[in-house]
Length: 288
Figure 1 (cartoon, helix red, strand yellow):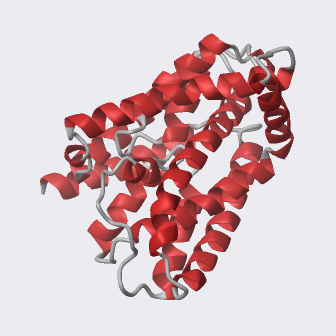
Figure 2 (spheres, helix red, strand yellow; figure 1 turned 120 degrees about the horizontal axis):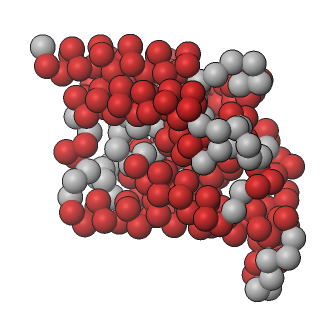
C-alpha cells in the first residue's frame, strides 16, 4: 500500500481539498500511477511524492488520495475475495473471543501485523520527522537499499512455508518490517515481501500475505481521512472521484494479476532492477 494516505491521515500534510483545478489528464495519470505501483514492490508513495516535484503538476490533495486508495482497495479485495471472506468470518469469531477456525487465525494475524505500523506512525508524527523523510535523496536511497535487500531475501530465503503456515509470531515480525515502509521509497509491499521471503514463505505466498496485510491498513487510513473529506468534498468533486476510483481500480487489478502470475515463473529481480535504476536517477537529481 502507498503509505502516503496513511501519513496524511496522521496529519503529515495539512491539505484537505484537492487543488482548485485538476484536468482529466492529471486525474488519470495519478490514478494509473497509484494503481500500477500500489501492490508492486516499487513504492507507490515514492512515485506519488515525486510526481508534483518532477512534473510540475499540482499536488493531488486528500480527496484524490482517498479515491485512488479506494480503487486499489477494491482491487485487492476482489482479487483475494476468498481470503477476505475467510477473514471476515474469522473476525466474527474473534469478537466472540474465539480463535478456533482458520478464518479467526487469519483475522488475528492481520490485526497483529497492523499494530506496529500504527504505533510507528504515531511516533513519527510526535517527533516531527515526516517532512525530513520526503526528500528526493531519501527516496532514492530507499529505492536502492531496500531493492537490494529484496533481492537478497528472494535469492537467499528458504522456500518452505505457505500462507496456511502464517503464525502470530511471523505476522508480528512482518508487521515490524511493514513499519519501515513509512520511509518514502521503501515500498510497503516490497518490504513485507522481503520479510516474508526471509521467514521462508514462497514467492507467491509472501506476496499474498503482503497484499492481505494492506487491506486493514488502507481501510483504517482511508476511514480516518474520509471523515475530513466527507465534510469538504463538493458536488463538483464527484466526477473526479469517480474517474480516479475507476482508473486506479482497473490499473491495480491488472498489475496485481500480472504480478501474481509472473511470480509463478520468475523472481523479484525485474522489480529490483527497476528500483535501483530509478534510485540512481533520483540521487543524480538530488545531488546535481
